[in-house]
Image (tube, rainbow, N blue to C red; front, top):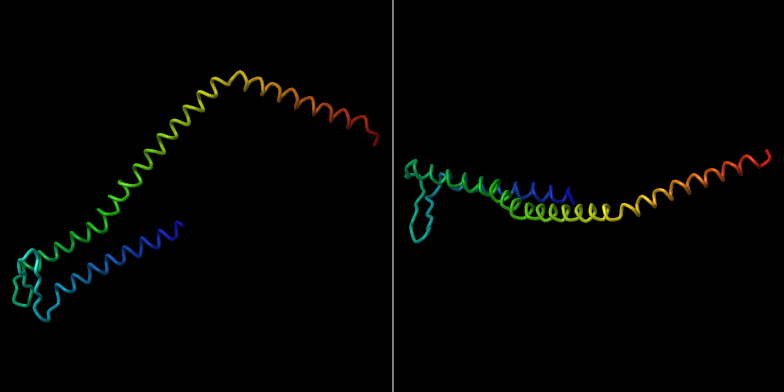
Length: 137
């Protein structure tokens, strides 16, 4: 799954870069004039336009690229991954508290079980050792 996400991320980043370069190429195309209508306002980009229009459009494309490459992934990361991390942290603290309380309340039984385990383990070893000594070789 990690490889799939890497491939999708690289593909998305390349598509954003191609779109940015395509927009830049359209703005700096030295052929016919470009006419853009935005909010019922006419914007003309052409060979006779001054440098300010080109500079503003280039800055706008740069800002749009930064938003697509940095802001959107950070918003998704902080908007999805951070709440999941907080929820998992709360569950981990609750589980640790329950296990700690269970260990404190069950400690006499745990100690009794440990004592029985040690005694029975030594008894089985002693029985195996005595059986090995009594068998003829």
